[in-house]
Length: 444
Image (cartoon, rainbow, N blue to C red; front, side, top):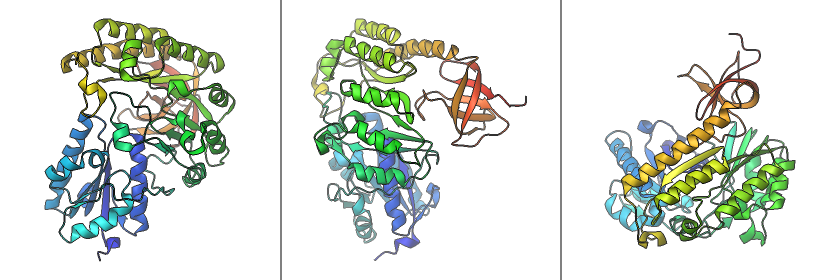
């Protein structure tokens, strides 16, 4: 048998924050075996690439990353492991073509890591996709800055959007048991911001308990003494009910922020996408949220260039953005994915035109965001310090209306500041996405 306590492991996690949580749990399995973990790729003897396969660009990035990693075999690297969504969905193609990799694991096969490596060290190329026990682990090695962490409360998806591969990669929606999630959250230590993620957090509990349980788990998470605040990502609009709104409104530990992926505003396109809701219902929801929680920040994502989308549809989406006045948005060009219903639709739109439409939507939202941020100049905001920006020679953080990595930042000067602590920052300048300021006691 191989003594893995004498081996050094490295991991590269691609894709979304849900994938990051999977990688953190895999790191914990490695640590429990007594192995060394390094963030220096060149020093790793066993290198793991946790892949994303949501879009063609994601698959391309995964393969390119794997090939880049394989080049280290001329140095210290002994074995290359490919895991996650790419082998889970495309193991037939990847096992045959990606000969540089020694071991392939799917999204639920992490318990087979060392068994597979034992076989790989005997000289085999090993495919263990689908062979794991899908064991839920509460243990993690957190890879985010210590003051915030993600909590993945479910896997899979039942929504069956016509453009999306997730159900065919991750399977049906599966809520994780509440008691295990609470144990996992407690094990994270002191966390300034706990960020709940799933393909759809608002559906939490229906499959496991027969009813929505997001509000209940929010109440229990915010009762934990080590959790300072909780942020919600990926809330589907049709699942946001009065009980959830009331919880966000009255629970001081819940960040007044919702990420509500809409994907489009026009009813015809929404129907083709198999998305619930309509333009009028979305606007009504935003009105209701802002009436109940005046300070609430709302983020969304949109897909443009979907088959048959016309220039008029794009103009109407632009007008929707101006009416909705969302705080933050992401825009993506439709990706034609094999094995999805939308792949077969007529009226596919060319790449250049899709990119043009993305650019147009960003331009509209940029002005909306700039106008919103400009109104904050002269005010004082509570800012969570994320660290130091050495390029700008100042501290950097976020106000409540910004999630890590996807939204804007607050750059500020202070005599001193600690990562994970909150500071009152007077805003002196803004641009399209970021704010700039200083603490009141800052000595210029």
